[in-house]
Amino acid sequence: MNLEVHGAKIFFEIPIFGGIPITETIVNTWIVMAVITLICIFLTRDLKVHAESKRQVVAEYLVGMVTDLVKNNMGERFMGYVPYIGALFSLSAFCSLSSLIGLYAPTSDLSTTAAWALMTFVMITYYKIRTNGIGGYLKGYTEPVFVMTPLNIISEIATPVSMAFRHFGNIASGSVVTLLIYGALSTLSAMVLGLLPGALGEVLSHIPIFAVGIPAVLSIYFDLFTSVLQAFIFSMLTMSYIKSACE
Image 1 (cartoon, rainbow, N blue to C red):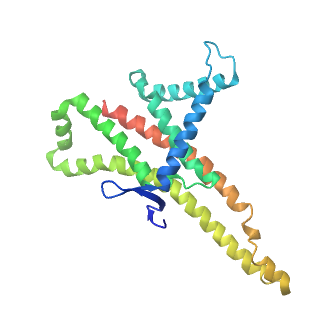
Image 2 (spheres, helix red, strand yellow):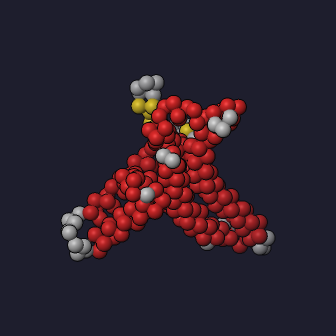
Image 3 (cartoon, helix red, strand yellow):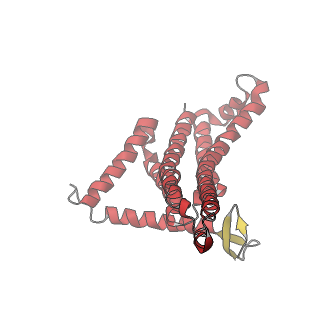
């Protein structure tokens, strides 16, 4: 199919409830989840009480790193969130990094980051109600004065919206910038090399020589550094908002 949803191709539709589209985003997300699962199985196979293999050392280091991250930012009370934060960070990072091997990055689709932000919002709301009760939760919208209620509602809704758009915008914009630079360098190559006389200029003008190397270097920043950075920021915001909901 040539249809697209949020820029992601629709591969096929499940003929129930009017047809559920299976997009490139969904397929690539499942591929990423399968890769993460296989990595986890590989790292945790044949674990010993005392690490005897490099695999177990790496596994223990990764678990310790996520544990310390949650402990330092949320406290002992929220140690149960270690698996969730670890899964969220790894899924976000691997989804963004999938563009390095030519896949459509699921985080370039707003529906992906919006779903993660919505899960965080549900947990925030849960802890606010659990801490203050339903009455205290609703009363919070009227503080410090009743006329602030509309602004408080907007502020509450803005939390998941800003999280979703921040992550999506940074990943999608990186891909767009890289493509624009590649296109500009290809055009410049055609213009300059086309000035060469005869058949040499005709042949070389069709080869994007100026586009070799520079887009790849930029891709290291946009696809590698930014992918890990945005995964870290999204995880930090998740921990911060959940902790604040309990105060």
